[in-house]
Length: 296
Image (tube, rainbow, N blue to C red; front, top):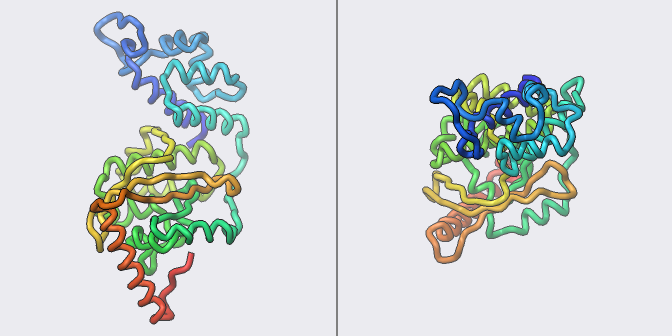
């Protein structure tokens, strides 16, 4: 899809979520042909002409000032992630990349890997915006062990496992929430990097092969993913719910370090201790078997 199409569907979908009552407008007439605001209502709330708003909604964000973008965001009651996404789309259509490019990156610095490995009590990993796991510590690899099976494509990709692997649904028990998070993160990254051929290829593969992904992708939801809780159904320790924090790496733009944890004296804490013991056993087995690898 073109950036203009993404802009149009994003703005239309956000406008459909706001009722006149929510916007503080009178709702005249019993039959409205749109589920949310009409274009003229959105234009009035944004303080622009209806003709100009229609142009914006058709994808012509190039040249729109920050004041206009902020006004549209306010009219449509965009949250922080949606507001940032609108800016990303405006920048993308202004740049108009002429060809798809691969976002190449060198190996992660040893200093970053040392920090990751030092987090011995917390499962942790580093991912890119495409949800490839680029590095993982021992406990993180143990937590995500169903993704690291022998023969799985490398780099391990969370979205591909979730939607295309038969074990994906079992591993993520909060399925609907997990689907919404994964797709929203990929949609957010697509706004930031519209010319990324690897991301475009992944989305194309998932849209083609997964109806659930295709349905969720069409909603144009985006989100910021800094902190929260996530549930897993692990084949060794059973169901476990962990708190997480996701931190962008300032020296590595586009990469995020995600770390999980839990309070002491909780079932999740006990499950993590069991997971650590199992990981140690797996490491011992790998040392005894030279054909197995546990590297970053």
